[in-house]
Image (cartoon, rainbow, N blue to C red; front, side, top):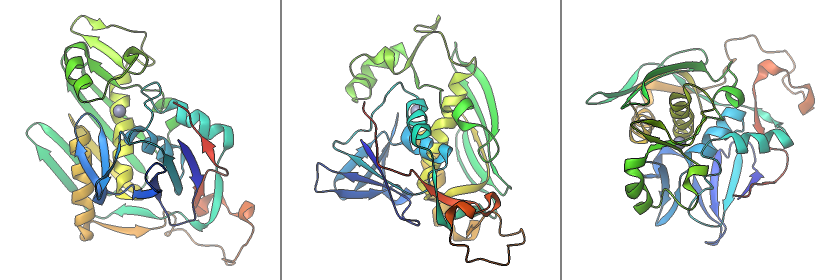
Amino acid sequence: MRLVPAPAGSGIVFRRTDLDNFEIPATGRNVAKVSYATSLMRGSVLISTTEHLLSALIGFGVDNVIVEVDNLELPILDGSALPYVEAFHSVGLKRQRRRREYIRILKEVEVRDGSKFIGVYPGSGYGIDYTIDFPQPIGHATFRGDLETGDYARLIAPARTFGFREDEPKLRDMGLIRGASEQCVIVLTAEGVQNGPLRFADEFVRHKVLDLIGDLALAGRRIQGHVVAERAGHAMHTALVQRLLRDRSAWELAHIYDELPQPADQSAEAEAATPDTDSPAAILPDTLSVHA
Ligand SMILES: [Zn+2]
C-alpha cells in the first residue's frame, strides 16, 4: 500500500493499482456491505476493511490523500491503527494553503436499532462518547474523548480488534481472519483474554472509538460536533453517516475558526507562516509505503 499526497479538496481516495487505477472516494455514497468490517464499492470494484486506515488518517490530521492498493483488502497489521500512526509520525504533516473544511453539525441526527443507538449533536470540537455492553469478559465500559484536543496517537490508535473464539470459524469463512490470527486480534473466551496482555484495561471500548472515527471519515470531512454511541458497530456508524449526508438541514460546511476574527492579510503565501488557529488542511509530505 502507498499513500500519495493529494491536492487540497480531494479528500481521501482509494486507488486500485491492480485495476487500471480505478478510484473509490472514501464517502458514504460508496459504502457497500458492512458487518465485521466496513467495505466500499463503486461499480463492481471493492475495497474492504477501510476503517483502521481511515481512523489513523483522521486521527493524525491528514485531510487529502490517495491510498494506492493492489488488492481488495487493506492490511490488518496488528489489528490497531498504531503501525499507521507510527509511519505517519516518521514523515510528519505538511500544511496546505487551503483551510480545512468541517461538517459542522447544526441539529441532532440519530439512528436507533433495538438497544443499539448512535447520534450526532452540535458541539465545538469532535467529541465522542462511546458505551459498550458485551458478554464477559468485556462487560460494560464507556470512553469519552475529544479528537480536537485529545491524544489520538496515544489513547486510541494502539487499541486492537477483538473477537470471541466461538466466532472464529464464521470470521474465517468470511475471510476476516487469515494466517496468524492471534497476531492481529485479541482472542476472547468466557474465561478471559487468551493472548494477553491488553494494551489498556479498557482496550475494547477504545477500539470501538477507533472504528467509529474511521467509519465517520466516510462523511468526507472531519466532523465538528459530538457523537454518542451505545452498543453500536460498523452498520450503525455507517447508517449515521448516510442519514447525516442525506439531511442537508442538519449540517453546514464550515471552517472551524470562522467565528474568530481573521487576520487582515489573507493572502499570506508562505505555508510555514500559517497560524495554528487558521486550521489548514494537511497532507503527508511525501509518498509513504506501508507493508503488511
Ligand atoms: Zn476495528
